[in-house]
Amino acid sequence: MVAAKLFRRNCLRRCQRTLKTHGQAVGYPKVVKARGRYTKYHYRFHPFDIVGWDGYVYPWSFNINDFQPITGKLHLPPPIHQTFTGWNFVVCSFCPRALDFHPEAIVIPYNHSNVDSDEVLYYCNDKFGSRKGIEEGSITMHPLGIPHGPQPGAVERSLGHTKTEELAVMLDTFHPLWMTEDAVAIEDPDYWKSWQTR
Ligand SMILES: [Fe+2]
Image 1 (cartoon, helix red, strand yellow):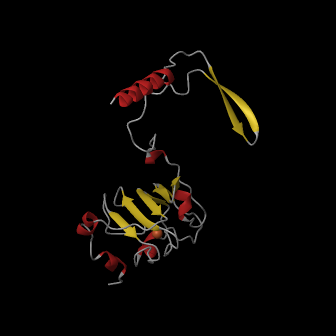
Image 2 (image 1 turned 90 degrees about the vertical axis):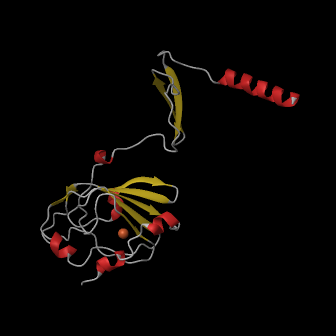
Image 3 (image 1 turned 90 degrees about the horizontal axis):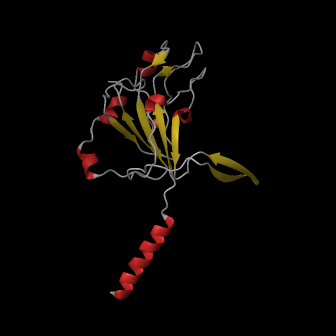
């Protein structure tokens, strides 16, 4: 018991000694090492003069409406939508944008099967170019190796379109995703039929 008390007292002393507040705008030098060279920055306020964060793993957020989409003459692959890269996953944002502008461009994705990732899409509205039958809040999951893409007729319907209003977020994971019981309970068992021609 005594040892524990002493340990706590020492910890408190250590914390009181190290957790100092620097609120004055007196200028704080910070040396940054890059490519073997040192550069000195001068901050007006202390770099640790922050309010703090609310406990999320990520210390900041990004509004999808601030994402600046990229458009090409012909269809460009999904990495143009990539917003975040993490350990073994990427996040892509499909935002309203001008579409591919070659006169013979097919402006929606080609059919594909991912060779290295599972793919989850969350639809923020019901205007996804390559897919009908989705609505705001829909989620699709396409596991690694399963072919998917535009439904029959989607390519034809897309020809001549010059812009899209789609808004969706995609999560690609490089390790397998497993369905929870809750996810299985809300699964649409007929989803695979959306690729049938009739
Ligand atoms: Fe895909």
